[in-house]
Image (cartoon, rainbow, N blue to C red):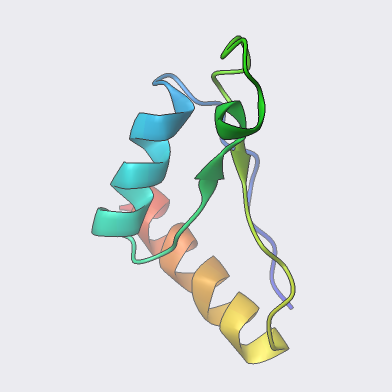
Length: 68
């Protein structure tokens, strides 16, 4: 399986998650959704309990989006 580079978020994680969902077709959850204080604002959580083919497709989409 391929790999995706670490992306340092420059926008709030909720905005980033909306962006990659609409623009790259890959869904993620902002980690801030799991904290009441809302202080964790620059991390995204991905679900990896998928078939390998689905994960590969998601990596391909993210790579294509961020390389463009």
